[in-house]
Length: 163
Image (cartoon, rainbow, N blue to C red):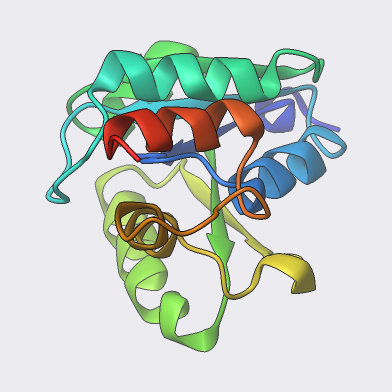
């Protein structure tokens, strides 16, 4: 494998991190020496967890998985890629509906820096329905999300919504 493909960045808000996110990072870690799970500070989404807590939850979920490192970032993803010396972005696709948005992001990033590649991985069948927004909504309404997130994340959600 060439040196530029030894590391990959998996960006997102991870609000909260789900078993689907973990599955993608774990599978990518079998293809790359290091997966950098990059937790975005700025997001157009309304987050329920502050950045530090999202990072801490992701670190707890990946604590026993070698080759996966969690870090926060702010600003343009391209700046993080340059700072980390990485040229490959990991993006997950659950359904065809995800592709249009992800394709647009990949295209603009490549237009801004031709060295940047985006690797799309299909979500495992067990997680095609899963999204952070659904997990937040189920939890907010008092539902059990333990089948969708790690116990530490389920507990954080229970505390967040005081249920």
